[in-house]
Structures are given as structure tokens and as C-alpha cells.
Image (cartoon, rainbow, N blue to C red):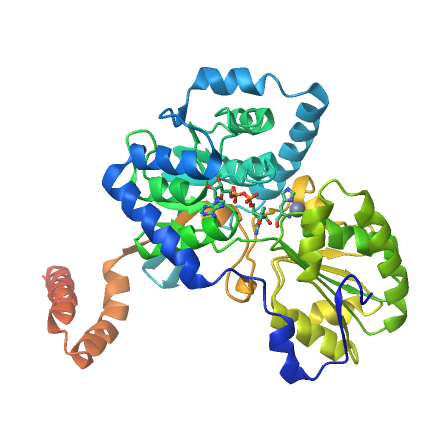
Length: 443
Ligand SMILES: NC(=O)c1ccc[n+]([C@@H]2O[C@H](COP(=O)([O-])OP(=O)(O)OC[C@H]3O[C@@H](n4cnc5c(N)ncnc54)[C@H](O)[C@@H]3O)[C@@H](O)[C@H]2O)c1
Ligand SMILES: N[C@H](CO)Cc1c[nH]c[nH+]1
Ligand SMILES: [Zn+2]
């Protein structure tokens, strides 16, 4: 496998950090261009957006908003077989996200102290649909479906146009299917800046969702510093495959290539405790790679990729958790052990017949997932990502009489006597009413 993926044989743990580093443009370089674009969009609005679209996407026009008629006429160009495939994927994604409605929480923590939670949609959301090297219309479903299930009122879709200013027909078809309210022909940093500040044609939103290249991902992180929520850093795609001789070398190679073809800066990793799988996977990689239309991109990504031979199942599990992959595929006799010890991953694919592509398109799980090790602290997009949870309480006099003294005690100890007073006042009234009741009863 040496000639295709850089190989490490039983590396020391001290070496792991170097092995798991992602191929990244320097943060300073990314931030410099992100700040330039954000400042320009804040000051000049749509004219800056159009200027950067001309520079980065070669489309020269001020018409950023895509009219409903244009979206509909573009959508109509989608071939029937593709519409049917999108419809099938839509149904599975819908079912899986509808099933994520949280259980009702409505309870008395103490007698007379009723607390409950209600889910509310985030009213205005922006969804970024990547389109630099491939029009990822599947992402429209991954973001549009949960936004619809959650009940978000305004969903603004941004995606880079081609040089004629069009979006791919299937992006438009999926947008209509998901009930997207606004479609804008803008991508990259300028799209995220426009969604952050709002321009004449691109509405500002409360939360920005969606995957993208390093520019888009850095721009989202910048937006979050400015007070707009984001789903998570969902940058260049990656997959980690844990395989042994129970795996099929052709499938392993195909899964690695499926993520390598996303872009030059994708990364794919294969780890094993059975070195003998190397030869078969290497041969398959070479053969399959040669047939790929996006061979050049996949080849570049494979330069960032690694094949690591590990000592035993404990090391395999520890390595997975240290890498925290966006996608984890396990085709290994120790599946149960590996799952039991799994702590960090975006989405997991088990066995020889669960290709990662299934999650990318149609099984129902979401493909917008944390990359670059962010699976240590972030989940992938899910229904809850589009909602806020509001807590409520109603406390009866009996309830306040029960918890009031504890509140007063704690407020005094924090030196916040007004807090205590808000309770004391009521407790005094409750006691007075009780005394009156006793007097009346005795009269
Ligand atoms: N993590 C996930 O959930 C997930 C899901 C799907 C796709 N992805 C990733 O999304 C990415 C899609 O990337 P893409 O490039 O094809 O599309 P993209 O839409 O993310 O980025 C294209 C835009 O980048 C901007 N850009 C390009 N070069 C630039 C430069 N030098 N300076 C400033 N801006 C520049 C342009 O405005 C262009 O419109 C891939 O890396 C893929 O792996 C990730
Ligand atoms: N694998 C990507 C997430 O990293 C999602 C995707 C969309 N289309 C194909 N793949
Ligand atoms: Zn993919």
C-alpha cells in the first residue's frame, strides 16, 4: 500500500498526533481572506457579494436572488429518474428526522413545582449547499428536511452559481420539495457573510447550517464569533475505515475513494491489526482509482491519507477516538468491542454492506457532520439542531412553600438578597392566607 497511502507500521502512541493531523490551509491565511470578505460585505452589501462572486465563481451579475419562477423552470430540467431517486431519499431522511422528536418532559420536581420543556423552531435559518467542484443537491435534503420538520419559518438557501448564474436543476428540485423560502446564487465566504449581516437580496439569519470547503468552514466559524449560531465546523470530507480479513478489499477501497474524491484536501484513513489486508486493498485502490473521473482530486487526497497497522483491538479503539472521524466504517471481527469503546465519531457504518455513500444520500441519517476532529465535541446535524428548547414552570403556593426556604438560603449565601426577597414576599402572603384560613375555620 506504500505507493498509494502513506503507511505506518505499529507507530508509537507519541507519533499518533502527527499521523492524525489534517491537511489544512494555514488558519491565518484563511482568516485574512475571510475578514476581508466579511468587512466588504458589511460595508457594501450586495455589490461586494457580486464582486466576490465575479472573482471566485466567474459569474458577473447583481441578481443574487433566484426568483421562484427561475427555480421552478430550472427544477423542471431534472431527469425523471433523478427526481424519483431524490423522492426516495427524501422519504427516508424525513422519516428518520421525524422520529427524532424528543420525548415529552413535563413533571413535578416536588409537589406543586411543575416544570416542562417545549421545542420551538429557530425562525430564520440559512442553509449552505456546496457547489464548488460538485453540486451537492443531497445537502438540500439533509438541511431542508429537518428545517421543515422543525417548523422553521424562513429558510434561505445559498449555493455558488455556475458561470451562467444557474444552480444545478436538482438543487432547485430538492429546494422546492423541501419548501425552501428563498434561494440565492452565492457561495463561499461571501454567502456566509451575507447570511450573517443581511444584504438587500440575502436575508440575515439566526443560524447558519451546512458543509463546505475550508473557506466556507472558516467563514462559518467567523460568523459564530459575530453572534450568529452555526451547526458545527463541517469541512473537507474524511473517512476512517477499521478493517480486517473479514472485510472485502474491493469494498474498503471503494469506500476510501468515495470520500477521497470530494476534494484535494479530503483525508481517508485505513487502520487494521491484520497487515495481510494491505495487498488486496492496495491493488483495488490502484485499479479503481484509475477508472475515476475525479481521479486527480482523489489522488491528491490520497497523498494526505494513511494506512496504519496497529497492535491490537485496544489500540484500534484508542486511535479511532483520537482521530474522531467524520465517518467511521467498521468491517472487523471485533465490531462489538470497538463499538463499546467508541467515544468520538460523526456517523458510523457497520459491516460489509453499509457503504458510507448510503449515509451521504439515502439511508436517512444526516450527512452534515463534524470534521477535523470536531466529532469530539459536536454532533452532526439532526432535528434538534433546528430547534431551541424553552423550559417552563408553574409553582403553586404549596410548591413555593416547599422550595422557598431553600431559595432564600441560597440567595442570601450568594449575597443577592433581592432574589431572596422575591420569594420571602410571597411566602409571607402564603402564611398570612393560611393563618386567615385557620382563623376563619376557628371562628
Ligand atoms: N463535513 C460535511 O458534512 C461535508 C458534507 C458535504 C461536503 N463536504 C465538503 O464540502 C466541500 C465542498 O467544497 P467545494 O469547494 O466543492 O464547494 P463549496 O461550495 O464549499 O466552496 C466553493 C466556494 O469556495 C469559494 N472559494 C474557492 N476558492 C477560493 C479562494 N481561493 N478564496 C476564497 N474563496 C474561494 C468560492 O466562492 C466558491 O463558490 C468539500 O471539501 C467536501 O468534502 C463536507
Ligand atoms: N460525504 C459528504 C460528507 O462528508 C456528503 C456527500 C454529499 N454528496 C456526496 N457526499
Ligand atoms: Zn460523500
